[in-house]
Structure formats: structure tokens, C-alpha cells
Image (cartoon, rainbow, N blue to C red; front, side, top):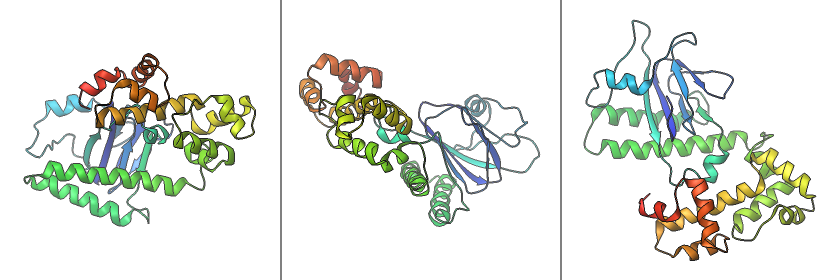
Length: 277
């Protein structure tokens, strides 16, 4: 399956294998595990690595679905039960959080830190789905939010002191970490790579290379992402004029702001505001 949003799976019972495009090693999932494919990347879930696969969404349409959304598929092998869903994020294209997460978040039921909250939350979700009572969809949605937040927190706690690349490593780096703090605190300033490099007493080339290596994208693209995220929040929350929002996020003209916004979000600021996202 593949989606333009984060996709999650809860292994309610049984075991299975997960293979995500671009991730070399397949992952064996066990009962109680929670997995998030953070960018909706194409992936396969199956009983054995040698088993053929079919499109999940075509499969769900061709099989009888129960009132609670359950359908059955397969042969006479051991039963595996999965709860699958998708998560849409406001400003997903510009979200700094999504940009720094790995392709897959895998929380194991056997992890000491996750043992209590993962089991309790997933059991609550399964109970709501099985009962199908009034308001069940709303309750499950909130519980899925909690699962995602907990999975992100577990990832940060597990990797904060050991990551050698990525955003967590960048934050620990004395110079790149301070540069990131400046960008997050003052995204509207007229930053250039030269200015950021000088603020950390580094050469332009050394700073750009180090920043890109650790963060995963060049300094100015990261800065633009922060600006577009701030602009999207303002477009959703009030009716400020575009020139006011453009100035607030560091653009001298509405035209240049609109061009950058469309490049990141696939629509103009006006279209984004009118879409009611």
C-alpha cells in the first residue's frame, strides 16, 4: 500500500513482515507492535518474505466488509489481525517534524518504556472498534493521535544521545545546533548561508556541507520550510492580508512569497486559505 499521508499498523495478534521501499532490511512485527510509515511510502505487509502481494485497497473493495470495517483474507495459516489507518497532518508538506522523522517508526510491545502505554492504548482502540458504539470513530481518532505522539517521543528518547546523523545529531552539534536555534527563533530574518556560517565562525562551504550532512537538506531550504510552516498556520487561523503574512515570514514581496509557498504546498496561499485546510 501507499498513501500521501502517514500510514500506521497495529499488530493486534499474530506476526508479519514489513518491507518499506527505500529501507533495506525487512522488519519482523510481533503481536502488540505499533508501526508508522511516516511519509506513506509504498510498503508491503505479508506472512512470509516469499509470499506474493496484492494491492490492499483493491483487496478491501473485493471482499465483504463488516460493519466495523473488518474484512478477512487468506488461507489456513496462523491468524494475524491488523488495525490499519492513515494520519493527515496540517501543513504536512512544510512540517519540520515530519521532515526530520525517519521513514519508519517501530515501537515494540516488548520495549520496557512502551510496555504499559502501548498495550493500554491499543487495547482501547480494539475495544472501540469491536463495539462500534456511538462516537467510536472520534475516540479512535484521538487515541491514534496519542499513539503517534508517543511513538515520536519514544524515537527521540531512544536516539537523542546516540544519533550520528539526522536532526537529533544536528541539535547536539555545537555549531549546527546553535544555527538551528537561530533559524527556529528568528525565521523571518534575511538569512543567507554566509550569515549563518559567520554566526558560528565557520566558512560558508564547511557550514553548508556540515548542515546538509546532519539535517538532510541545505540550510536555506530548511529555512524556507520553517517560513512556509509559519505562513500556513497564519493562513489557517486568521484573515490577515497576504502582504502582512509575507513580511512576517521574511519576504519583501507577495510574489516571491507566493512562489515559495506554492512550491512547498502545491497551491497558492489564496488557494490554501480557501480550501479550508
